[in-house]
Image (tube, rainbow, N blue to C red; front, side, top):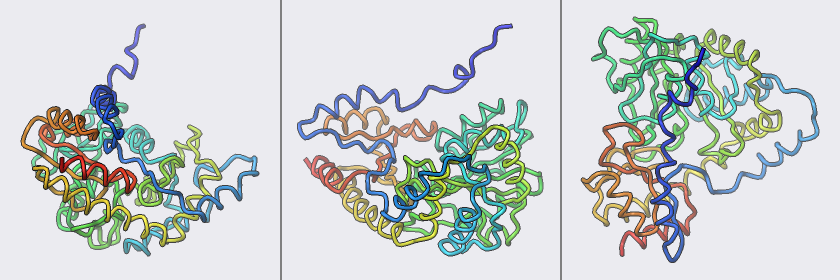
Length: 367
């Protein structure tokens, strides 16, 4: 029996469509300023690199659950950095990068055809991909209370948001948690930008002000890519409801989803020390100040963007027109429709470029 390949059921990979704009931007006399993808460009802290190298000669298999040191460091960092109390190290599970985790969560937690996964109106594309890989239906909704009779099994939250930088407040999060618990729905909060608040204080789904210290039905996903510059390391973790984490652990054991031991050691070092994250946040703060002023001076309006690594900006025209306008100035951004229909007149401009490239972008926007 002929089966349709899984790839044909998925949307086109959005960044492939930027080839023409990228080529135009690369032709600019001083070269491209690529602000389309939020990939770190700054150094990895020396203590993290040293931790990675220290276990490079250990040939045995790592455990899927991760080392006790890694799980303890993760739990302690959540309390120290974000005031999340009550996380048991046994309820921490490392991931091979949080994109992988997000893409497979619905399937690993037995979401299936006929089920519905709710994602934000403007959302990181992998939330939709994960639901489709599980055969589920996808509904875009920022307010769960207007949902109809669908069999909702999972809700994805993302605060601070990619792409908009929007921060969900305590009361909003509490309402989502209450709604979901009444219906037995799993809530997954992607919190990879939680440490990058600018004009608002981001709050975790697991914050006691949100969940009253009860994690039932709740999962929080954390990445070390952004504030520790570990995107190439593929290091992250999930925590929250101990039963859900235990279910994920059992499936991932069978599937061989284990984080390499040197990466676990590096992640432990990153989670145990806060100074490098504070230094990196200040780098982004300075770049944000320069770029946001230049974007506004060039006639854009910036919406939300109170946290995270992006400016969500518009010139009141189709995003494709804005992308072309920027490319003529050697700047590449991401069109808002990558993230949902509501982004059709916005572009996402990343702060993840060197100081020199950010300054170059500001000069070009002023010309």
